[in-house]
Length: 75
Length: 162
Image (spheres, rainbow over the protein chains, first blue to last red):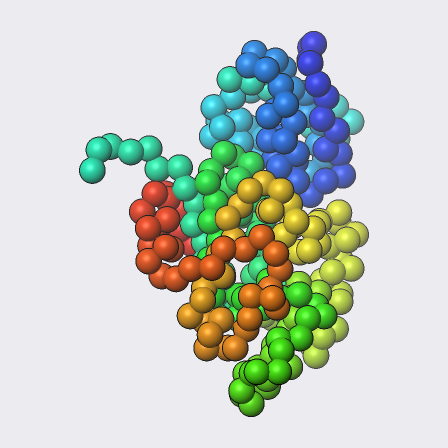
């Protein structure tokens, strides 16, 4: 899936994936897609929870070789 | 009062233990990432989390205030654990394990909190009681009392005492 920006949060522990995601998405325009890669197991539910609370849209979620991938559309 | 969307997170950081301070800052930075207006109130032992490592409080302190200044931990590197402190070995082991798991240090979390515009407030009453001066605490703090905290808490839908 196409994205406007890829955030590599691999190796980062809680709460850094959501903190970085917030910082990255602030730099994007509404409708842009932020792609996040994370390895923290909690991210599997944390990124969707963050997306919901902050009003953005989780377009797609995937796991590939133990790397969690998320595509988030900025509100 | 008109219906208001509460979007605040307020926390009282009462304890000055490394583990509890870590938990406070993880929740605070997480909440800020979720778009909350976060305010952390530091009172009693929690103030030690905000102390600078190498600053003396000046010579106009009373005897007991000087004693407190000496005995209380100076800043994030000097805090004890609430469990398994083992005379200072516990925190060393905990920091090593945190590093191995790529968890940010407390110092880094505090810097991150400031970057995320988390409001950190030092309770002036407990500063007075323990003889802590503004120059002994890190920069960028606000100084206030219980009414400011309560008024912030009114606009908050998450309120923790740690």
